[in-house]
Image 1 (tube, rainbow, N blue to C red):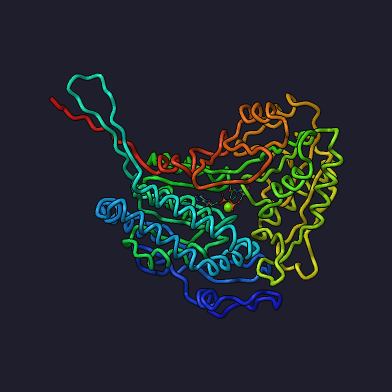
Image 2 (cartoon, rainbow, N blue to C red):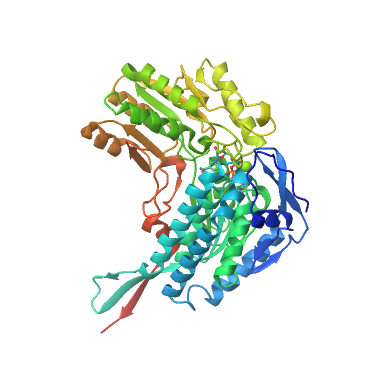
Length: 505
Ligand code: NAI
Ligand code: MG
């Protein structure tokens, strides 16, 4: 395939990236590279320019079936979880992390091209965090233990073992293409499962490249498979397939509901990491300089395309104007631009034309319902007119009842709202169907602990925002999800417990 012409302002594509984009890209099934059986393909687009980057196979139900058969065969043969020792499995996962680090510049360019994010961010955040994730779970392979249970039946010995679930279909989104895949693949592998990864149709490239690294690392064929394709076809077929034992999903609540419905006939295990409308609360006694910078990046980090975006900003009334002004000053310094341009921006475009329309729709709705923007509010034109660029936008004069204050926008838009006292803001913060994250800025220890206890969310950040670590559990209360990723909890999420009884006298 002929390569697209990239803007002159772009850094040079690495030769490996150039070669990769020029190839006929294939699905990775059972250790082999194959086109979709129907020959169907789709285009993936550079959101900085709107130009086609590459064509990738569009997996259909028959390709899903082939991948499930391959993964099933490998799982049932025990080639991964039984024939290799725990230590050998750990070493392979560690080797994969080494390869990811060695190929970091390539993976970073692929994610920057496909998603639009600044390549420097991809290289310093997305790729190293992904590799760390594999290293953390490489260590787990030798630490997955059962228990001996003091049952009250005379003469009986009872113990538990943790076993893999089997074949896991992992369906991931486009906001952190490589990292969201790593969050699921690493614990699923460590627990001994075989995997079929379905990357988002907007960002399929790094997943295909990752499959090469699995091949190079020497994993048994069929342990890791990649199907690029649309949610409604490839994703839906994975969810419905009786040969898939578990679906791990990150994405929208509406697709999560479809997944729950479509998995009902086979009753497969489902874990869900969904979105939020996370409250970020600034008390007047906080270190306001720190809070201003923290709240700015809680709102606009990754362009607000983050399930934990601090998109409902509650500020104590007596410092409201000061804090909003401070945030507007911070936002004015943010450089928006193409993720691959030599002079690196802070933020790139949103991921797609669809996402641009959705976010601009919310912004229009905000204005129409009486909100004011203190900064931002427009699509960017000029040299950026062909891409999907939106100014980081801070809304004030927002009521909790407005759509922009209730729904996940998943773009660079934050609603700043004043509050008068702690009980009031606690109630307002919890008045949401979501519960992924929440945070507060204060110097008062009692307030910090009280809010940590009373905020109904899976992660609480105090005088910080956005931190995650492979060792610390992450997931949502309420409609933000089922189950916890990361930490020991993710091993539980990807394993079954077996209780064994033995007559011992
Ligand atoms: P989405 O939920 O449609 O896509 C996420 C993944 O699900 C993709 O891999 C997609 O192909 C797959 N999928 C879609 N329909 C499916 C189906 N019927 N069966 C199985 N898999 C399916 O998210 P989308 O449309 O890309 O973004 C829409 C909104 O979702 C965003 O504006 C944001 O609010 C939310 N979202 C939240 C994310 C999070 O991290 N929690 C990530 C991505 C989106
Ligand atoms: Mg969708």
